[in-house]
Image 1 (cartoon, rainbow, N blue to C red):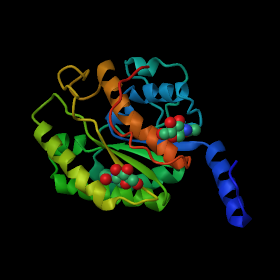
Image 2: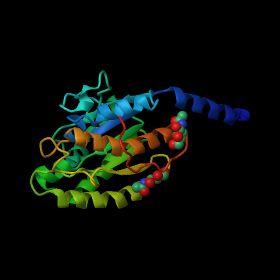
Image 3: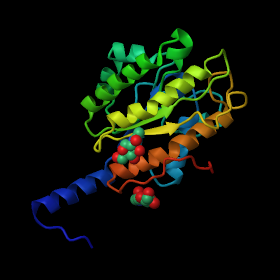
Length: 246
Ligand SMILES: *[C@@H]1O[C@H](CO)[C@@H](O)[C@H](O)[C@H]1NC(C)=O
Ligand SMILES: *[C@@H]1O[C@H](CO)[C@@H](O)[C@H](O)[C@H]1NC(C)=O
């Protein structure tokens, strides 16, 4: 039994009860690799199976009709903030995330962005990183305790963009370290390494079943870690990939 004394103890007790009973709002944020994909369904199912039934996926979109197995999971929470074709730079310049987070506040966010910046407009890595900084600022303005998981993005098969994608991915680590905060950590998840652009994509850009499975497995330990941190259950180091068992 935990011994609690005084008002501080009471506040601690109340806040820990709230943390355990209120829903954790998770916003999957990105472009089409967040919107028209099925990894969100796989993650939702795995969360239920692991007993994390208090996670509310949030966002203005409900697309979950891609062809993969994860999209056939019955009644999964399809809410997300994935916007097909969008550039990180445009989302930041137009302050779109501000309104999205006003409509759907979040405690936890995953961000997989940058593919369209590189593929559509060959934007320099520095400009994409500058946009990421603005987006993180907007996340924290919305919620100073926002837990942020940022992807080093997957490779694609079309065109000749993977060198530039790798340059962005390399820049993400020191960028995230520089912006890290105790109350609003940024965890980087490597979605690139081990992702096979020949066999894990359905159309050269978007994940097929194998790709959805890999993406879900990469997000998973970082998500569970973040959920445990939000619930006041300490920090784990579990941000490396796990073998998917669903
Ligand atoms: C940010 O800090 C957290 C601890 O709060 C740590 O787990 C995480 O690895 C750090 N992020 C980076 C990019 O170093
Ligand atoms: C608390 O964190 C530990 C370590 O990550 C984990 O094994 C356990 O399941 C968590 N408990 C709850 C209730 O989330």
